[in-house]
Image (cartoon, rainbow, N blue to C red; front, side, top):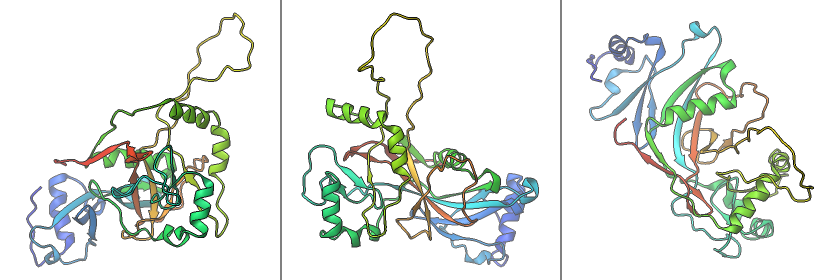
Length: 305
């Protein structure tokens, strides 16, 4: 969109000219400058229009109007990243083993381990205790954006739906065919069969000074229910709808600022209550680009927005 404005005016004037074109009230428009997949600046209406330079990439976003919602509106700034670094080597951070299924550190996703024993050893004597929360690099993808939600609608499930819908404007997602083997299927069956136990474990918070949880790759299919130990008998039963395992394409983190790589992971508390997130908070979408060290999901920049 081409907008004409006076360089001696303010951003309010720029938004006014844009408002006439898109037929959206000025108070519901936000203007940001984007550079290298990041938000360079969030403009306020009183900023000088002369601060905009030729060649700057500007995005305008429509947000909810407080008057229409009759409640506070939370505005969130979102960046997109790959969860695993492209330079991360698929090998145990303690013993160096690179065969079999390794699990990632859930705090940084920047280290693999064979088992809990290797993780504990590397945490206590291998230096990961100090390195874990110091990850400073991430592979950005797509374009940043802004979303807004009325406070009462800021639940985990609704936030995920909104983010998933909006991020697809700037990324193309492709999941390559997954090679499976018997050991992988068995591991998946065990994991799916004990979902209740895993759900309880996910709620546990590591004690102070203890290493983080290990991440198990999510399964993309549901195993057949086990019939071991049951007595076969002839009977007529009605078909039941099977619950598909939850397939997560990304995890969401709440960041102290845009430059932070590691933040607090936003999890589903299953209550359906609004999340405690303040307006103006930065979130990061972290795509599950790898699974067991192999490409799991290809997330690429869209050529045309």
